[in-house]
Length: 154
Image 1: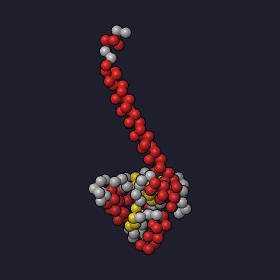
Image 2: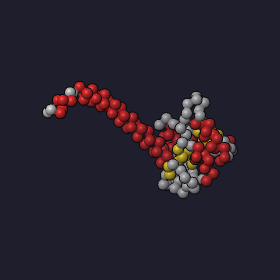
Image 3: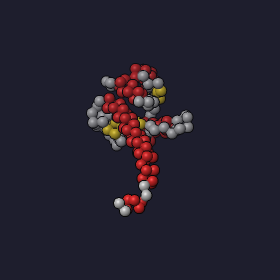
Image 4: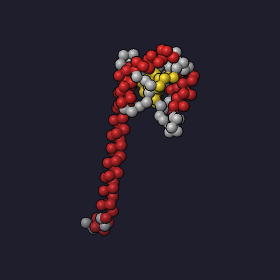
C-alpha cells in the first residue's frame, strides 16, 4: 500500500513496537517486512491462530502486560484476533465486522495519525492530573488554615 513505510515509521516514532502477522509465506513476508522496516515477523499464520499469538504478545516475555492493537483490512477472518486485541483498527471503510476504530477512507496514514494523536492526548491528560495535584497541594492547606468562624461572621 502507498505510504505504508511512512505509517510504520510514524508508529515506531511514538514508541510502539510493530509485529507483522501474515498468512503469506516466509519469503514474501520477510521481503515486505524489510521494505517496511519491521523487525519482527510471524509468517504463515492462519486466521484462527492470530488470536493466540495476540494473547502471547499481550503477555510479553518481560512478564509485563502489553496492550496490543490489531490493524486489519476489514476481513471477516480476523474476528477472533479482533476480539483478543485491546484495540482493533480497520483502515478501510468497508469493514466486514466490528472494529474499535474504523478509518473512513483507504489512506493507511490515518492509522499513524491515530497513534500520534493518542500520544498527544495522553500527554495532555497527564499534565492535567499533575496540575490538579499541584493546585490541591497549594489550595487545601490555605483553605484549612482559615478559621470557620471568620467566614461565618464576616
